[in-house]
Figure 1 (cartoon, rainbow, N blue to C red):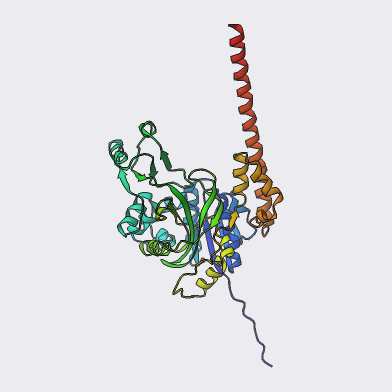
Figure 2 (figure 1 turned 90 degrees about the vertical axis):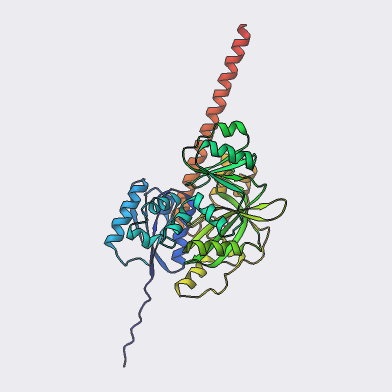
Length: 403
């Protein structure tokens, strides 16, 4: 009688390196684990991603981007050929690695072609908008300004309001909305900036999956609610845009990008035309919502792992108008803006609970603790403001009474 041995298929291994503590990346271990990957993470121990229950190993590092880079360098040196893929989880870490992209180990893990042009394209807002324009992708009218004199000339031509962007930045932190000459006069040009014509319209975002430059799948939506004018989405509304795919394919061809990416555009209110605005060449916080429109990234990643060839990208089914609130971002926004109706919806409307991370109890508890701490800090700040206003009112009253 022959003894038959069952050979268990070895899981593919992925390493996520993360510095910036943002909640969106915490969904990634679950997604990859569901796609039959074994997940290791390098990050500061207090980061959201470190709380995931779907980690094989977590390697804690100090909360400095240089510390993450140094640990990543040493870890990969000691674990050669261990990982099928290394994922860079946030923009500051991506920028830091791109600055040393001449080092061989960095070239091997960057999510783009290793040539200098591709590296600049994914790491610099200036090179991104310039190269996209050169390749025929529609972008708002813009000028690159190296000093205040050039910025004044550019603004005179583009008109107010104007949008200014530094070369590096994330979460809207390096984008400035300048409404008038006074605000422009107060803006300090310490480095080259992009001066971009402001287009009145609705912000459109896309989650796209690439396989070494080939567009495999994508879905698009309006940013229904955000944490600020240029902040992250806290609720999205699905929408199909028929002229979007050619833009996404162009970006893949320019960069050779490999992985999950986020792209931001603006839909002109007058013409309906799409203009490319921003890139996020790393996973975004909406990586799990594609299932609502037939684009399950878990299954897409499984197909790529099985060497499936995407002759045409997987597109979303039409559920335009469907709104999905994002947890915990939309709860935090409601607390910050004192949006009582929004908070009531999260408390009593079950359809709001779909995106809560019920699949990960450890992460869920961490999120609730974070929300409670945020609510307490917001309440304390509001009370301080009220107290100072009362003191100021009393002082004014006493001054008037004394006179």
